[in-house]
Length: 208
Image (cartoon, rainbow, N blue to C red; front, side):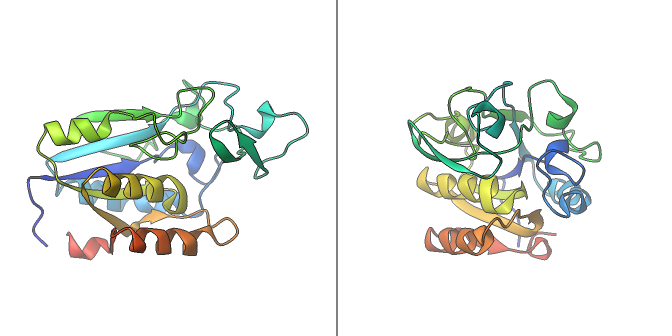
């Protein structure tokens, strides 16, 4: 598959806290890093998404006395899964994996910065109305197709892909350059939701 100059690679949350040994580790998360570097070499346009939470974020179980990680509560914008504290601003856990080598990336988009609203998607926060500005950035640059890789496939990658479709982009997820948490069957649900929304699910061999 020839990669159009109107395509961008979106690298989602390849950060230490999502790597085995981190606070919210995705199994085998470190294994995708060399492949992401290789894929990025095929793209002129690369954007990196970074989870960037203030301490005491509303999505942290520690912010809700008596609650534990993976409990589900109601926040003003709807259901919220509670997570271990992770990707706290200016901590080692929030830094990108040291093996990630994307020198030509032109934009790092930080999400989850609002202390009261979670943000899985690189396009739209969890209140489903606050945008990150990514769609406008890509459209200003003439991008019409977005390929997504990273962590976790069944949360931040999936929501970014769904929102890319809603914003009018062609969207593809590179499955072997992503990894899932698979919390209570969340991977199967994510695959079905992406297929229903018209997200292409591909392997890296179709691009390299």
